[in-house]
Image (cartoon, rainbow, N blue to C red):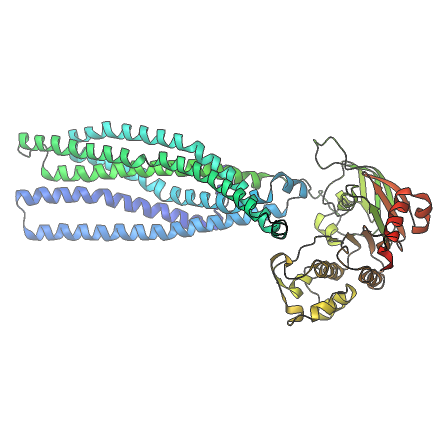
Length: 580
């Protein structure tokens, strides 16, 4: 896990190493200053020339300045290294998520992925910063201070034999007690973020059903749950301070009492005032180093759960990968389903699709009709290889989709969903997702074919109108038409419309389909629809029922041969849907 995360340091190795170097310099100087100070105190007591005092004082001032400079440089390089490490880590996580298939994303909830890229990365960044700075400085200060304490104090250093093990044991026990609560918190962050995400996305539904109070209570419960765990953990960690103070005061009393006694009895020959002063300073340094090490231990243990969660994302292998020698050119838009059966998970008991045999010629217009849950969308998702078939094969242009380079295949297939997404930015920028090189004239032409130009030009800024996040400032029908225009700009070999005209009237729907015939005549067009009028002129209509193809034919043929199709047609025509 550590090796995997260490790879994210990359170009920030130099500032990380510089931090270590300057921390070592700072630690050495800080432990030498009390030694020189103690020697100066003893020399002043014994009588020394003023110029010697000035020289030693100047040396101490220079050492203090050098220590300060080392500390400042270490702080700057540490900040650069830790911030860069976090940037690389987020970059690697985001890049990895982009390679995920739907199957991988289903494994991690979207709220969990957001938590891992934000809260978890921040925790790991904090640990990295402490490791390259505090986790180096504290052990060095501890070792140097103990060595110098024995050099300066001799028998007085016995105090540390008592204090250090007691403090170390106490800090470890406190940390172990706090860790379970910290670990629980990170899992609960996912639940909290999921509640926020769900609420924001479904705000219209929440307000429509007046469920604001329910959602508030739901959020408060999740937040309160996290507060309780954090409070419990922090209450335990707070015991560090009194334990530290007990050990500190014990050390001070021991050094002052025993040191004073030894100074008086030996007349300053064994231990003198300077040594006592140095021992108090070294004692403070030793105990503070132990205190910092305990905090590092708490932080690293707390962030170890974050490290684990991040590594889960980085080490997750995409369910779909390119073959060794992928095909990069899609010959045409013909589609073949050969004995296809599919289920979303290897562990699923029921197949979503089974026994699918189907041939679609390039350039055909194909309609797909079926009730909710009949797996219409599942069928078309196999074409751009959003999922792999469980049994059988799907071919595009006569080649198994598993033999294509995934990017090349998907570049030749455009999908327009019922709830397609618009991104923050202008209308023009959103449309160029279909073709980054599209000219303004091509954009306008695509919008006219998708029946979007009229409402776009009604905005004061026209095609430069800003789209808010998620496209909340345009209606459902407007959003669908913009998404269709975006797909048209791609000029794909296969165009899939997954109930993507459900929010427009039948007249507009008919005009859009008419535009397809003139703009992309050689493109295979697959239209999933609930309205018979959207598919009745198709070259082929597929009737889906419970994951199987129930019937295939043209409109007139299906009216005679398909009970399901005839029933849907009669319900819609009797209800006047096609006569509007």
